[in-house]
Amino acid sequence: DAIELSTLSDRERQILACAAVGESNKEIADHLCVSVDTVKTHLHHIYQKLSVDGRVEAVIAYLRRQ
Image (tube, rainbow, N blue to C red; front, side, top):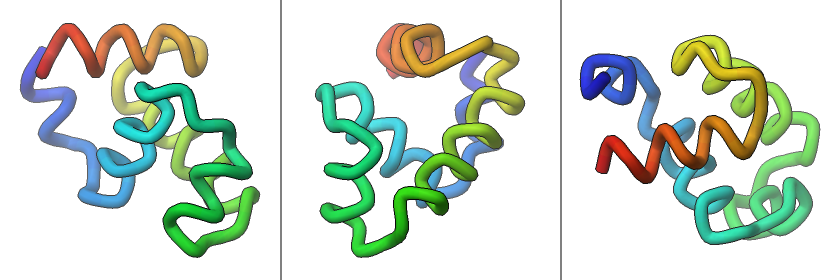
């Protein structure tokens, strides 16, 4: 499981950490000075790397593996 988290880029980890504290895609985008589309792309990659189906599962996986 920890190996899966290690496959995330630094930016993907930042985005997942923001999602874990309840930030919306727009809030994450504003916080990290990127577009909402960029956030969505990173989230899609995160879901693939963690083998999850969505945001809630990704956040749960992230919190369990901290």
